[in-house]
Image (cartoon, rainbow, N blue to C red; front, side, top):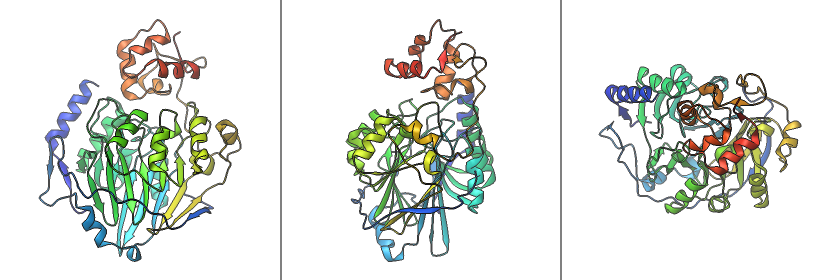
Length: 423
C-alpha cells in the first residue's frame, strides 16, 4: 500500500515492556474441482472510519478511502485473476491473497500458521513471493501469528495489522521485536473501517473495541474483489458473531472460512445464514486433538447446501477469482463426512504438527506443564496458559474455572478431551 500508518519506537518499546512485565511445501498436482458463475455481493457501506485508536501516527495522505471511489477505479473487465490460497498448515490458519493490477503485484497474508513450524514461510517461497503488502494477525495466539517474526525478517513487509490485544507468549514478543527491528508500519483496524488495496476492498467487521479476550477481539473482515467476496473471522466465537450481526454491515459473501477451525464455538446458524456462502473452508490438522471440525458444524454447513473444503482432506485450497466467477483447485479430493475422524483416516497426510512433550501418561499435568505445553489443552491459549501458571497449584481439574473464560461448558470440553489432569 502506498499510504502507511506508523508506530513510533517509543510506543512499541512501551508495549514490549508492558507485555514483558505481564509477561510446506508448494501445491503439486492441483486439480480443478469447482466453478461458480455470476456471484454477486451486496455493496458495503461507503462510510469509512479513519481514526486509529492508540498512539499511532498517521501520514497526511488518507489510508482509508471512500468505497464508491474505489469501485469506480476498477471495473470487471479490468480485473486480472486473484488467487486466494488457504494454505495447509495443520492445526492453524494461513490465507494468502495474491493479485495484480497492470504490472503492480499485491500480496496480503491473513494469519501465518503455528509457532513450531515453518510451512508458511516455505510456501511463500515456493510461490516466488518477495513482498507482502499487509500481514494481518487475526489475534495473537501462537497458531495464528506463529511465523510472523520469520516472515517479517525474510520478506519486505509493508504493514502489520494486529488487534491490539497482547499476550505474554514468546511468539507475540518476537513478533513485536521483528516489527520494530524491520521498521514495519503498524495498524490496529476497527469495525467499520474500509481499505482499498488496489482493486481489493477490505471491510473490517470486528473488533469494534478490545475486550481483553483474544478470541472476542479477533480481526474479522470481508475481502471484496469485483462481485466476489470472502469472509475470514479468525477464532471469533458465537458471541462475537452475534456482535458482528448487530453492526449493520452486510455480511453476505461467496466464501466463508469457518471460525475457530470449525469448532462448535463458532459458525452459529444465524451467522451462517447472514453470510450465506456458496463455499466454506475449514483449516484444521489431521486427527487434531480438539476434534476440529466438530460434527454439528459440518452438518450445519452441508444441510445448507454449501460446498465444503478442508485442508485436512483437500490439502492447500486455491480459489481463483476474476471478479465474477470462482474456480477452486485442491491438492487432493476427499469426502467430508460428518464423522470427521473417518474422513481424516482416508486422507493423504501432509507434514503433521509436532506434538508437545506431555511427559508420562496421556494427559497434561496443569500443575507442572510449561506454558507452551499447556496450550495443547483444548481452549487454552497463551494468555490462559500464563494464568494457569500464576494460579497453581490446582487440587483438581475443575479448579480451572478460576481461569478467565473457562466456564462450565468449556471445562466439560477440557475434561472430555482427557488432555488436562492433576497428578
